[in-house]
View 1 (cartoon, rainbow, N blue to C red):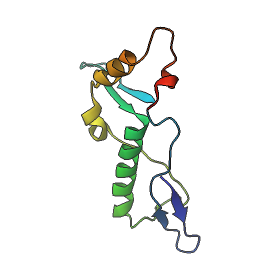
View 2: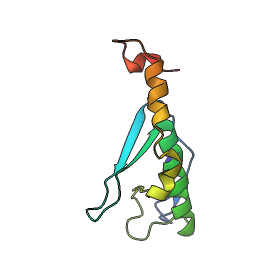
View 3: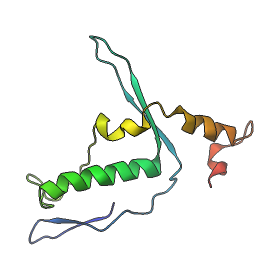
View 4: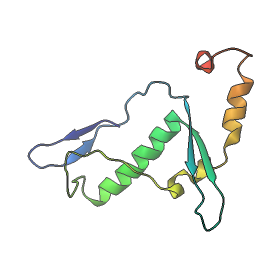
Length: 113
Protein backbone atom coordinates (compact mmCIF):
# COMPACT_ATOMS: atom_id res chain seq x y z
CA UNK A 1 0.00 0.00 0.00
CA UNK A 2 1.07 3.53 -0.54
CA UNK A 3 1.35 5.51 2.68
CA UNK A 4 2.16 9.14 3.29
CA UNK A 5 3.43 10.60 6.55
CA UNK A 6 2.44 14.08 7.68
CA UNK A 7 5.66 15.48 9.22
CA UNK A 8 3.76 17.86 11.49
CA UNK A 9 1.09 15.57 12.94
CA UNK A 10 3.17 12.38 12.58
CA UNK A 11 0.04 10.70 11.22
CA UNK A 12 0.17 8.24 8.36
CA UNK A 13 -2.41 8.20 5.59
CA UNK A 14 -3.39 5.22 3.46
CA UNK A 15 -3.30 6.29 -0.19
CA UNK A 16 -4.47 2.89 -1.43
CA UNK A 17 -2.82 -0.18 -2.88
CA UNK A 18 0.17 0.08 -5.16
CA UNK A 19 0.41 -1.86 -8.39
CA UNK A 20 2.65 -4.81 -7.64
CA UNK A 21 4.93 -6.70 -9.98
CA UNK A 22 4.22 -10.40 -10.46
CA UNK A 23 0.82 -10.44 -8.70
CA UNK A 24 0.41 -14.13 -9.56
CA UNK A 25 3.65 -15.13 -7.84
CA UNK A 26 2.87 -17.86 -5.33
CA UNK A 27 3.93 -17.54 -1.70
CA UNK A 28 4.00 -20.45 0.73
CA UNK A 29 4.10 -19.52 4.41
CA UNK A 30 5.03 -22.31 6.80
CA UNK A 31 4.14 -22.33 10.48
CA UNK A 32 6.49 -24.88 12.01
CA UNK A 33 4.85 -27.10 14.61
CA UNK A 34 5.92 -26.54 18.20
CA UNK A 35 8.25 -29.18 19.65
CA UNK A 36 5.56 -30.35 22.07
CA UNK A 37 3.31 -31.58 19.27
CA UNK A 38 1.00 -30.49 16.52
CA UNK A 39 1.73 -30.31 12.83
CA UNK A 40 3.35 -27.94 10.42
CA UNK A 41 0.84 -25.67 8.71
CA UNK A 42 1.06 -24.36 5.15
CA UNK A 43 -0.58 -21.23 3.75
CA UNK A 44 -0.49 -20.89 -0.04
CA UNK A 45 -1.53 -17.65 -1.74
CA UNK A 46 -0.59 -15.27 -4.52
CA UNK A 47 1.29 -12.04 -4.07
CA UNK A 48 -1.92 -10.13 -4.89
CA UNK A 49 -3.78 -12.03 -2.16
CA UNK A 50 -0.95 -11.34 0.28
CA UNK A 51 -1.18 -7.65 -0.54
CA UNK A 52 -4.88 -7.71 0.41
CA UNK A 53 -4.10 -9.45 3.72
CA UNK A 54 -1.36 -6.95 4.54
CA UNK A 55 -3.49 -3.92 3.70
CA UNK A 56 -6.41 -5.26 5.72
CA UNK A 57 -4.32 -6.04 8.79
CA UNK A 58 -2.23 -2.86 8.70
CA UNK A 59 -5.32 -0.70 8.22
CA UNK A 60 -7.20 -2.42 11.06
CA UNK A 61 -4.26 -1.96 13.42
CA UNK A 62 -3.61 1.66 12.41
CA UNK A 63 -7.32 2.56 12.63
CA UNK A 64 -7.12 1.77 16.36
CA UNK A 65 -4.19 4.18 16.66
CA UNK A 66 -5.77 6.95 14.59
CA UNK A 67 -2.98 6.27 12.07
CA UNK A 68 -0.25 7.47 14.46
CA UNK A 69 2.39 4.90 15.31
CA UNK A 70 3.29 5.18 19.01
CA UNK A 71 7.06 4.65 18.88
CA UNK A 72 8.25 5.38 15.36
CA UNK A 73 5.80 7.42 13.29
CA UNK A 74 7.77 6.75 10.09
CA UNK A 75 7.70 2.96 10.46
CA UNK A 76 5.62 0.97 8.00
CA UNK A 77 6.21 -2.39 9.65
CA UNK A 78 3.33 -4.73 8.87
CA UNK A 79 2.74 -8.07 10.55
CA UNK A 80 0.02 -10.62 10.30
CA UNK A 81 -1.03 -13.63 12.30
CA UNK A 82 -1.94 -17.16 11.36
CA UNK A 83 -5.59 -16.23 11.88
CA UNK A 84 -5.20 -13.61 9.12
CA UNK A 85 -4.07 -16.31 6.70
CA UNK A 86 -6.46 -19.15 7.58
CA UNK A 87 -8.46 -18.99 4.37
CA UNK A 88 -5.29 -19.92 2.47
CA UNK A 89 -4.33 -22.88 4.65
CA UNK A 90 -3.56 -26.00 2.63
CA UNK A 91 -4.50 -24.18 -0.58
CA UNK A 92 -2.46 -26.68 -2.61
CA UNK A 93 -4.93 -26.37 -5.48
CA UNK A 94 -3.35 -23.03 -6.36
CA UNK A 95 -0.05 -24.77 -7.08
CA UNK A 96 -1.73 -27.70 -8.83
CA UNK A 97 -3.69 -25.37 -11.10
CA UNK A 98 -0.60 -23.32 -11.92
CA UNK A 99 1.42 -26.39 -12.79
CA UNK A 100 -1.41 -27.67 -14.98
CA UNK A 101 -1.14 -24.49 -17.08
CA UNK A 102 2.52 -25.08 -17.89
CA UNK A 103 4.19 -27.37 -20.37
CA UNK A 104 7.23 -29.41 -19.52
CA UNK A 105 10.28 -27.16 -19.54
CA UNK A 106 8.20 -23.98 -19.77
CA UNK A 107 8.88 -21.20 -17.28
CA UNK A 108 6.00 -20.49 -14.90
CA UNK A 109 6.60 -16.77 -15.49
CA UNK A 110 5.44 -17.09 -19.08
CA UNK A 111 1.97 -18.24 -17.95
CA UNK A 112 0.99 -14.90 -16.42
CA UNK A 113 -2.55 -13.93 -17.26
